[in-house]
Every structure is written in structure tokens, then in C-alpha cells.
Image (tube, rainbow, N blue to C red):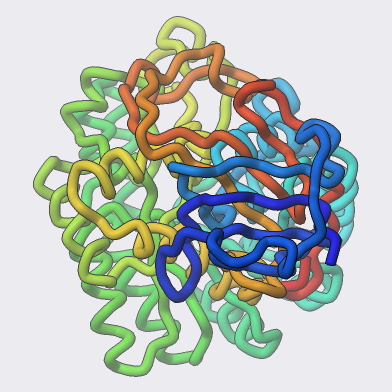
Length: 466
């Protein structure tokens, strides 16, 4: 049997555990995994050639981990509409450099917002033209488009996203009656509804008060833990009433995770995600770093950070996603944006998702690497119906994988980042573990020694199939 690519001698993180093995790839699919002491000629014909050519390549991964490609279930790539912030080309290049081989792009922060069939078709064209890794697309549930959900589902939206609070003039938040109707429709369509949970009444009042004070602490008060807890509980109650599958996006609080866990015991079909910035940064860091770390919900107390790690370890958190939300440098600059309260709210982090979690979780806290890959690969793939084609390193799965050097230490610098605008709260952070190479369906889309990416020929997903 001839292989297009062989990854040789790495520590392969497979569903059954970590094993030293060679991985053979043919036609974009993992076609063989075998022990290095096995007679290689019995498993494959000789392979040779240039890795850059990616034809018959033989990659030495000894001493490195071979991980399933990361499935980032929560990114905003702003394409079409705001190419000065990010687009599918730069966003997916950054993803590839971070070991991410599938992104699921959110319906807002672009123009137009993906709240109609026509807008979804524009997003599909942008993604097909520029994406360097595979992707799937969220549709949006806003205050007047429940009737659009079926057409968007048929056209390829794999899930719907709603807000319980102000999300911008082009993405009206779903009032409780619309959210309830949207859940019923999502259940009928068999699709997931993801929700940004903050209470509108409390946050709007808090934002008005914060505008008068203009401080970081007033912003934190406007987006207090109470706003997140109240909105989450309301969403879970509606899910219990409707039988819908709901996903609590970017949870920041252990109490929110606990509420989801309790609801599942009552038969509610609910899942919950968190993000690396809620596991690494605290309110004190926000005051130190400033607008680059501003997001909503905001980072919380150090006590909450530690408690969130406890939920990661005990399995209460279902998945971790980056919530990569890009902006221009001026939108994050105090002078250019008009002050902290007017600065863009969102964190850039798709490229650092894997190394940051490896550093903080695996190296510092002892999180098993297999558990980390479940949180960032297998579980998001399962949630969106992509597993085991995505999220698993096993025979028959797409050859989406990353070679990860666990010993390399590096400092995040602007020149390392593929973002349109090189800002991130991780800037200057010393990380351990670095992506050396990323393959999307067997094609090398990132190789650290070339510091470049190439197109992966991504296809538009339909109902969980990429």
C-alpha cells in the first residue's frame, strides 16, 4: 500500500490512549497506524520525497506528540464584511498555526450577520474561497427570524446562536418569547441552540451606569456574575420545557457549569463550554492588561478561575473553545477607541488555544493530555455531529492532525501571529509546547520551519458533514 504521507515515530494520542506509532495517510484519510517496530514494508511501500511537496512525504515525529486536529467550535472570522479585522484567510491561517483543523464560525461580527438564507450563502462563498482548514457555520437566532431557521438548516447551518442581551444593532438579542419559539424550532430541526447568557435588564442598566464612571471596575459590575447566572438559569428552564438541545457558550463561572450539570440530571439536554482566557486570566489581569483582554462575559476573580479548573478536571465542562473575536489595533487602543468602555469586546486566541492550555493545564496542573484532546477535539466534534470523521486520530478518520513539540518553550510575539491585527492578551507570555506541523485532510497547511500556510481545499459542511 502506498501512502501520500507518513508521520513516523511520534507519540500518537488516539482514542484508546497514547502510543508510539507511525501514521499512514492516503487520499486525505488516516489509512494505517502501526507500531514502529513492525516491519514497515509490510505496512506500507517505501515513501520518500520533499515534505513541502507533500507527495510521498516521510515526517519524523520522534519525541513529539501527534494529536488529533483541534475542532474550535467558537470563532468569529468577520468574513464577509470586516476584512480589516480578520477574514477567513487570516483567521484559518492562524488556526492552522495553532493546530486547529476545523473551525465553526459564528453568525455575528461580520456583515451581513448570518440571520437569513441569503446571508448564509454569502458566508459560504467567503469561506469556500479563502479558508485554509475545514469549517462549519453557525446560523443566528435573532428577534425576528425564527421562520428563517429551516431554510438555513437545509443550506448547511449546523447550529444556531442566540443572545439574551444586547449584541449589536445587526444582531438583535432574542427576547424570551422568541428564544422559546427558537428552541422549539431547533428541536424540530434536530439542531443545537447555543446561547450567550447575560441578563439584558441588568447589563443594560449596568452599562448605563458604567458610562458615567468609565472605569474597568464599573464594566465588571455591569457584567456581574449575577447577570450570567440568571440568564443561564432561564435558558435551562426553557430547554427543560421544550426538550431542545442547548449549549451554554463561554461560561466563566463554576456556578454556571454546576447549573448545567444539575439540569442534565433532570433530563435537560444541555452542554457547556469555557474558553482559555477564563482559565488563565482574572479581573486583576484585566486591570493590568486593559482593552486587549476586554470581552463579555468578562474574566472573573482568581477564585472563579481556580474553580473553573476544578470543573475541567472533574468532567463538568464539555468543551473548550477560543471564542476568537478579532478587531483592529485601534479598536483595542484606549485613544483610538475612545476609552475602555468603547473598546472592542473580544479576545484573539485561536492560534494560542492549544499551547496555552497545554502550558497551563497539562504542564502546570497535570491535566492528562488525553483529557485535553477530548475537550478541544473529540467533544466539540461529537457535539456538532462531526465525530469520528473529525476529532479523532484513528483509521478511517480524516487526516486532520498536528505534530506538537511538548518541550519547546517560546514567547508569544507579534511576528508569530497570523492574525490581521497582531494583538492578544497572550502577548509576551512564555508558553511550553509548540505546533510544528498541521495537516488538514492529509495536506500540510502549516509547517513551523517554513512559517507559512497553504490552502487545504476546505469544503462547505452540510448537517455535520464536512
